Amino acid sequence: MELMLEQRGEVKVMVVPGDALVSSGVEGFKREAEGQLGSGEKVLLDLSTVRFIDSSGCGALLHLQRLVRERGGDLRVFGATSTVRAMFEQLRIQRVLPVYPGRDEAMRGLAVTP
Image 1 (cartoon, rainbow, N blue to C red):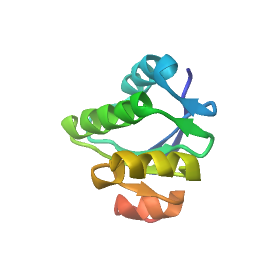
Image 2 (cartoon, rainbow, N blue to C red):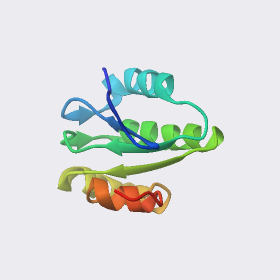
Image 3 (cartoon, helix red, strand yellow):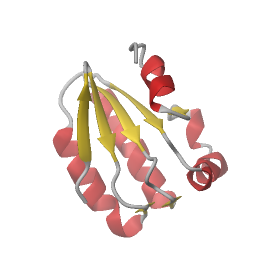
Image 4 (tube, helix red, strand yellow):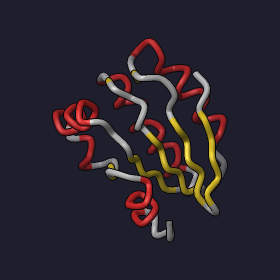
């Protein structure tokens, strides 16, 4: 799995490739994402191409959030499809991981002007 990266000012945008984030791809996702993180970074994770996520994928997102925080940064997620949002609601992910409908809202969530 190769994340697509985009730098928007002080914010790093990571686009999750593929249409699923499931157990078979979680380790690759975590390894790739961890390798792209520095200290104190503001990170947006774009899930707009992901059509399905399982509990392992959700765990990987929470792992990434913890890692970003440990390094003094902040993480926001945006672009989740209705199926992915349904899984987030079922697992109550949005209680601990800020999820926004679009990039601009997520940037504002990081207190950055889009």
